[in-house]
Image 1 (cartoon, one colour):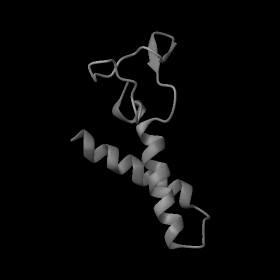
Image 2: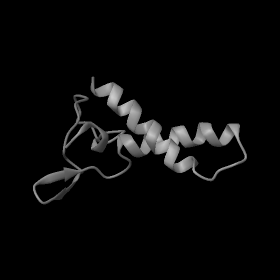
Image 3: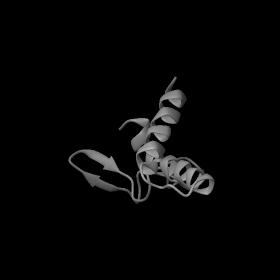
Image 4: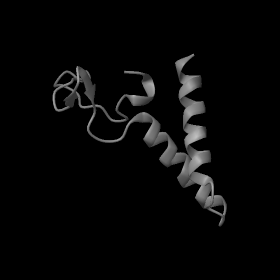
Length: 76
């Protein structure tokens, strides 16, 4: 699972470490229930973009591109 597919707010055990408990399994991979980091960052970017303009056409695509750019930088 790459960084962009990791959960934005992971489920943690009693010691504060992320755990797979509570996640949905699928084909040997673990999928988080809830928003991924990519979805969360794109939503935040879109929220900021909408607050600055009345033209919303194309903003979703731009917000996802911004989220992908942020995740790429975080992976460095």
